[in-house]
Length: 411
Ligand SMILES: Cc1ncc(COP(=O)(O)O)c(C=O)c1O
Image (cartoon, rainbow, N blue to C red; front, side, top):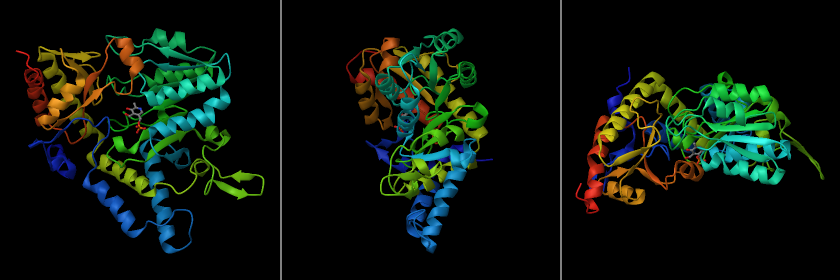
């Protein structure tokens, strides 16, 4: 049994003082911190094996190729995919753009629709606007229930119809923390013959995700939100779809043979990985997978659920705080809560909390259409990682009332 109390000790960055205070990091939904285990594996790769994968036949190059492809196999097993269905990209945004350029723009036409929830992160929204503009297809929104923050069944039934070719949605909302009903969305999309795109950026760090079991056609996530390095992400695609898609970028390593006027492309996944890849990043991502597995999903989930309940109950007791979305402490939430403090712009709140050593996110959280729909201009967001403790939550709750006091309010 892992001692979850001491997890923060694995993360050297958390040991520093910020503005003279113990550092309380509550912005893991933006990017999580990295444990020594991951940092050491990346360091070891660069110190012992970092030749160019797939390019050389000498010992170091073979070692680099093995490290890169082992990383792919580790990641594939972790998310319930086959290794040749896992493509390394720079981040979730690039993965979603790849689907847009190589699948959506070739398969959409006037009269078709792309359906997404109103709550999507801009990375899973703007690419569909671009695809719709380029092809004449309609971008159609499913509106969430403002109380429960879920997508009503009636919206799923009504909006996804026989014109729909793509249904794209987050697994967990980066603003609301709510989990969307993948099974229902996939079932409805299949009934009308549409493909599904799962934005798993905020789910993969918090619970076990299995793309084959969920039955999605495409999925995307980033290493840096799951204790891995920045600069590496994953695109999952069903093999039959990847085989039919054209490459995204062109150049070295993604070809079989090049003639003067044309070329034969490699099979997936290499068809989508032009040029020298972020092999150190892939190694770091695989190390992050192993780190998560060493903690165990049961431990992670029970810990994060308990912390989230503590945070939600504490926020409910605060006189001047309104939660964006459902304020119910018992509601299912995965690592994220957004809120506002009466009379305080979220940027001021974040700056004042930083003066107490607490890092939260402030602003629109890359979700303008959602905030417009909810009638909120911006908000504070606190989000959890495996290293957070009751002490972190209590520190945030004790400092929130000080924000208004610093700004001169009486209470
Ligand atoms: C739900 C969701 N999707 C996509 C992204 C984009 O991730 P990245 O910036 O790593 O591409 C984010 C990042 O915050 C996110 O929260």
